[in-house]
Amino acid sequence: MATDWLGSIVSINCGESLGVYQGRVSAVDQVSQTISLTRPFHNGVKCLVPEVTFRAGDITELKILEIPGPGESRQCGDLQQTEMGIPGVGCQVGPSQNGTGKVLKKPISSSAPQNIPRRTDMKNQDIIISPQQQCSKSYMDRHVEALTQSKGFRRRHNSWSSSSRHPNQVTPKKSGLKNGQMKSKDDECFGDDIDEIPDTDFDFEGNLALFDKAAVFEEIETYERRSGTRSRGTPNEKPARYRHDENILESEPIVYRRIVVPQNANKEFCTDSGLVVPSVSYELHKKLLSVAEKHGLTLERRLEMTGVCASQMALSLLGGPNRLNPKNVHQRPTVALLCGPHVKGAQGISCGRHLSNHDVHVILFLPNFVKMLESITNELNLFSKTQGQQVSSVKDLPDTPVDLVINCLDCHENAFLRDQPWYKAVVDWANQNRAPVLSIDPPINEMEQGIDAKWSLALGLPLPLGERAGRVYLCDIGIPQKVFQEVGINYHSPFGCKFVIPLHST
Picture 1 (cartoon, helix red, strand yellow):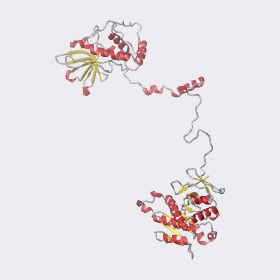
Picture 2 (cartoon, rainbow, N blue to C red):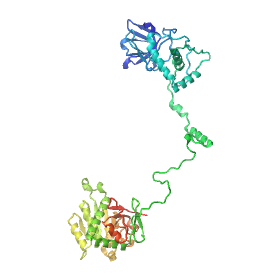
Picture 3 (cartoon, rainbow, N blue to C red):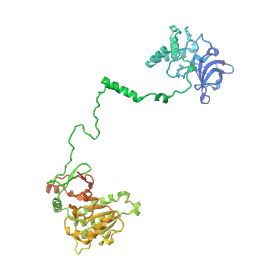
């Protein structure tokens, strides 16, 4: 019975150490339990030796790839017309005499799609199936029949058959047996010569370089322009595309006016969200503060609110949490606070008290006067309880640049103070110190400002400030909405979740 498998093409799996061998069975020794393969392939590579022999103990799995017909030679034949295919899915056959199982596998060609020569030694006679081969043959019949029903297999099968047909080849007659038809189709589709498969790898990069993508796309566009059609049925004209911040319908820009003043504003500002904030005259602003004080928003409350907002803005300008934290005690910022003997000076003193409470080194300049306002006296009393330093002479101000200068010298009234010697000396010191300047509630007239500011803080509603005021910020000092309505201002808060917001000139 062992001689019945001579000439069969088999695949022997010897485990991970030895690998997989394929070849034609040349000898089977039942006594020594060995099997020999002629012209073998090891892991898909042709072996240098003409024949190898395996012991039954080394074989893990044995698969039958092709069984010779009854008329074919069972001796060690030439593999010129046989291709070693990749093992497919087979049906397990009963164990052979040497104890090794055999599985029938459908040979699958590993060559690239090209003109494959047909086998010229195809036999016309019928194939006789032995009982031992019935399981494997019937499974291969079903497997090949399922493949022939697929569209892609029929297309490749027909193209290969037509291109590889030899002129002198005789078409095998149909024996009427199903297995005979499958054998013929297998030979037509997978019957190329194993020796004609090129050993070199396919050059993907070289073949890709031969494809001129730009030329192909240009040819497609030229064809579409001539025919008046576009690919995939899209119209020839490109539809208009809009960005995420564009409107499909054209319209005028939306202006958010939620604050309306009774008189035409000389200047308008806008917030980061686009809300328009009109400026008010000094007379209207003064009237607004007077009405608020009549309703209970006293000067002390307003000074406290102004000091908190101004100190919060100053802390942000000094670096915020990056500068002011317990680990940065060696970088304590220094602020020079320049105040005059008026309400604006009291606002600056309140700001200095809050800054000193946040570990800022504050140097307060306030000239000596025989009689001070009550608000200034109260604020000085509170400031003296902090670590801040108070000076009354310009000589006591630092010679080195400070981190920030807060200007509260100027006032909307009492213009005679600008002619005082102490005022001129302080202005000269501030202009020579080269430190950035923050002005709190600066006057409208630019001629009244002796120090150019980088930032200016307005209270409630902004005044029509000029270019010397720098960038304008607005702070909320707690004026109720009905107080605005009482003075004729239709007011809606522009602050949102903040107490200090930046304003931009329109």
